[in-house]
Length: 210
Image (tube, rainbow, N blue to C red; front, top):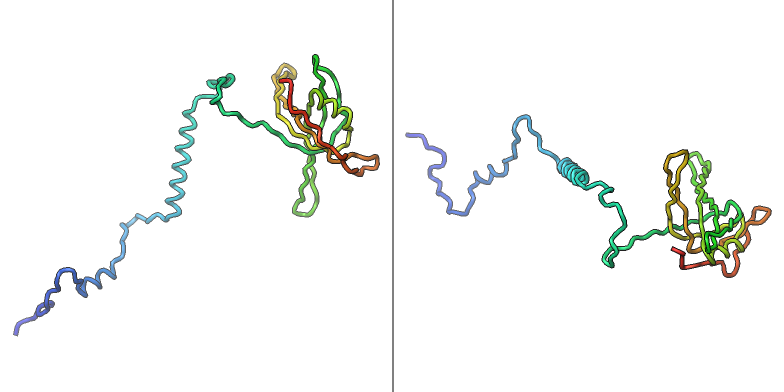
């Protein structure tokens, strides 16, 4: 009696019907990586893509022309977009307003001190002070010189303007705030307490000589 080979006597399934052997083999298939190679995780792939993007951005930035190539005023055209130069500060006046004239224009110079506070982890309070140079023109200068005094707490709003000069032969640049609006928040009293602001504290002058 001869040997019977496996599979003899079985009918071949029609096309489209998977055999049990095929189902078992497909269920046990697992991707096998080559020795010495590891599959990269999605996080590593995302990190590599971000690094490539940053390298491409830095390379494109190095190809930009220097700022000196674009020096000069912008073209006088309505298509040129306008930029915003606006600074808002609160603080106390460090001294009395100084009034003087520049040609036919009235000017008031003020010093504003802004205080910043924060609490450290042990619980102590740290304070830092910033000094700002303020300039008011025309009617606003007259109002500041007549109504504001040292120690008053004010809100100021205006444009930042650079002032170029020289110190010991070296060029320097400082900045001043050209005021467009001043609001008196409270007045200083001799005992260090704050009094209520006036009924109409807003001092505004919309136009500047330049």
